[in-house]
Image 1 (cartoon, rainbow, N blue to C red):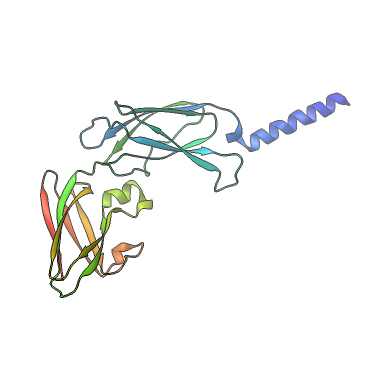
Image 2 (cartoon, rainbow, N blue to C red; image 1 turned 90 degrees about the horizontal axis):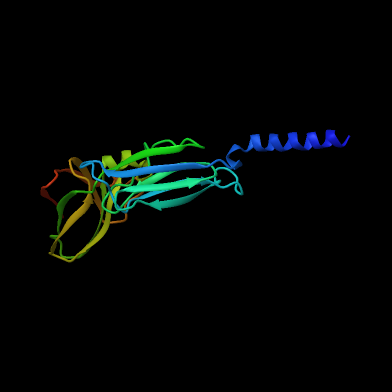
Amino acid sequence: MTRILVFIAAATGLILLACNPEEQPLTTSVKGTVIDKVTGAPVPGAYAQFKVYNPSSDNPYNYIPESVAAGSNGQFYYKNDLGIQFDRAGRQGYLVKGNGLPGISRGDVNYVTVALIPRDGAFYLNIVNSLNMGRAVYVNMYSPSQHSEFDITNGLVYRDTIMIGAMASTSTLITTIPAEETIGIYWDFQPLPFNFRLAPYGDSLFVARNDTATFTISF
């Protein structure tokens, strides 16, 4: 009788483990390199963020974020005994990448390369106020590359509220955008909605690399 009980207990344990495969200790490691998509050079100081399985929580909140930083050679290393997913990568001066990341094979050593798009474009945003009263101008900018790299951003690469006095003008150098693409520029005199491309005022500008164009909003 004792042997039967022991067998049943062991079998029950196996079933429980089989139902929760990510809870079984199984070392997964990621050896990665972050590079500049334009130049191919390593990106030191970039971060790689992973979602790590958390058995104490229920779906869909059973993952917690953990990040590691790349060294001076753009390389990073991460390992964990629970299930992990590659969540995002980025660094100041680059677009955040959350789409199209390499898959992670559990229980293996995964060698990955992540290419980040640099924010290497620039242009001057001029605002000219011809009214006898000051205004606040709410400006958002859209990048197709940022939208495709991480759709949760909605393509937003720049947001600002610019205060301008009566009969005045201002000029701002925008340096947070990628080059070699058409940037959408949207504005209003009140805060823009989440889907800022529905703003009543909008236009676009092609931003070339190694060039500084000018875009003017006047009213």
